[in-house]
Length: 640
View 1 (cartoon, rainbow, N blue to C red):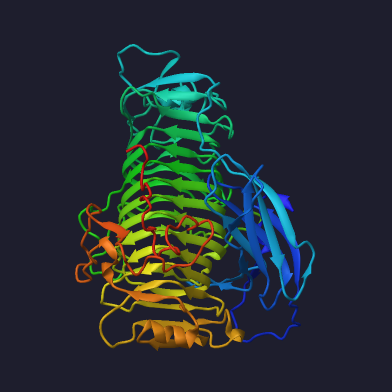
View 2: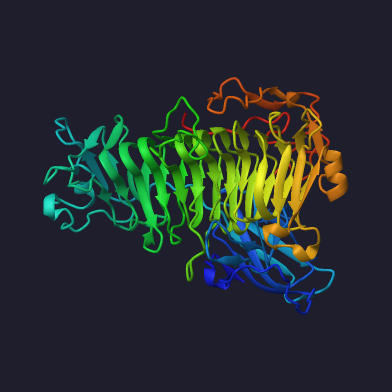
């Protein structure tokens, strides 16, 4: 067992040949042999794990999970780990086929921050187990990053400031961070002043350089960027925050990027207003470098193209929380980017995009972008680099996206997307395009008005838990493998089927979901999947399509949705359905009430999902994102 280590992508299998439908004749080994156990770097609320195995060709092995706070006696149940192995990810005109390794992976959810836990994993297999069948490990969740109290403090004032200054005082951020005389060709000459643990307090005013002026007073000549390169530590970050005496505005003067922090580890930004730049925080580039420990809290970013971005597998430990990000897209119209006579111009791209490990993006308000919050699509996990894993997106409030609310595209293991609210996205609500084994967890998200589809699962993503969400839109899933659906509400208008999709694995599962009962005699459910186990993970052309008029027919012929049910749209207190004839219409969030009505058929209709719905109030968990009688989650910034 190895704790808090990074796995290398080279341990995964890469097949650089075209996929064939034929199945090679190999010796069957149903007994499970256990191998390396990996503890991923935990976040504030979750911890992820991986357990590599061989054998178990019949996929009969399971791993039960329990946990307890250190010092407690009783164990609590968590979701079992997901069995992974043999799923093939390929497509989108790429020349590679990625095959997932034999393993289990999964997360313990709903933990408390800065708390130590014991976690127990018990592997069983009716065909026998060779090697260690139980793991008991300790993990400690992270605490929210905070400034260090024992470092030097520097005060920054805007150009032309005439009032009294606290000392030591400097004009502009670069002078405080680096030193005097850093303008013009001398911008990178001074040795950096700040060290780990130091605090730079930025006083009220507008910080806008003239990047087309030589020897600009803020040392932003031509490129217009604050290029920061010093190293903080997790315990002693370098802090750049508003001093508290009024609004601090960093105006990018139209620059491509404003804060270049690719080389700046453990920097903490708080209370700033950032505007008029294409990229507010540029934090990493694939195959170049990426910073660690970037914290951005309580900031407002407006008139921007991108808020925070890293494309680097080396990036880790970001905390992006309680910010307001406002893009440049038309606020009054919902417009997509393809299939339209006049697609949306790309005036803003994504609000937040990350890659790497142990990132948290929570409680942000995001509006008027192409995409809201994303994992970098990235492509194949890089050789000799850490895998993209242990990332949390939660309780964000997202409004009016041209493409998707949230994307898990490019993630590998333990991507957790939960308790977010999204209103108005043109093409899809949640995306997995693709996922390289998973699991990715989508749970308790509340999503409304997508003219396209609820779930953009395509390019054969593998390992997806879709649990306990509310979708008020149609759902048509392109393709996926090893996916599992429980306790969701799919409440779409009458213009399309209630549910349709393609899975490449017969071990995909659907049950305890609620679907809107739609009018008419046409088929309301369509499903394409392998007709026999030997076709699991074969090419799409070998999948068999079935259509069903009712959920009962769907269940009877496939074995799915034994406990599923059809519902009316009147299950909510006040949620009118979107009008499918008005695809560009913007629905405001005010006035909608997604709580279940007393007596709703969605109440007590779900199944138990440990760490997700343990606190249910009735005879059984309800369907959808909101349990009857529970308070609403606090979506968006906690400081508003």
